[in-house]
Amino acid sequence: MPKAFRYPQTGALMRHYTEGDFLDCQIARVPEPSLSAADLALMTVFAMPRWVMVLLAIRNALVKPFGLKTGTEQGYAPPTRDDILERRYTGAFAVDHVSSEEVTFGSDDRHMDFRISVIKTRAPMGYVALATWVHPHNIWGRLYLWGVLPFHKLIVWRMLANLRDDVERGR
Image 1: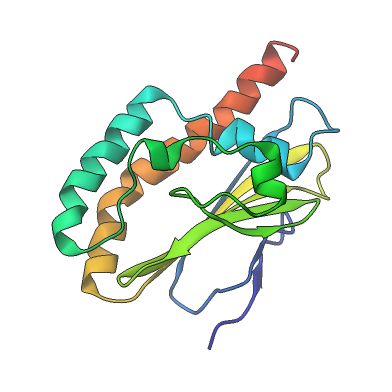
Image 2: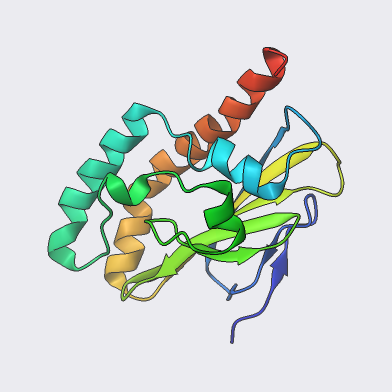
């Protein structure tokens, strides 16, 4: 039965969590404390470097024969802030939940469900957390998760490094 899981360090809430699901959470300082969760989502989830887009294209080619959802480069195009706030964005990372402190993206598939939450943390203040939840439904979902895990941490680290770079540059 799904239950909520709250990350103690950040307050991130994974609403769909069940025992055995994959959970990950990484945090970084925000460049400007007044930024909203939607702004932080645009600066992290939708500011992926070109090499991540290449990995996603390879991923799509590899998983398409197995029936996993694939996105096109257009499906990874960044939404506008209003698209996020009004939950209109339906690209590869469709908007699932929006509040002033958190935006959650993701989708459900035959093989697995996933969510990525961008949380403007309450404590410690001045940080953003990227929390990931994955629930594999079958062997294909578990194999997919196993295959992407080494890249997942690196990609999330890079997304947060974009913010760290902005902080260091004084933006």
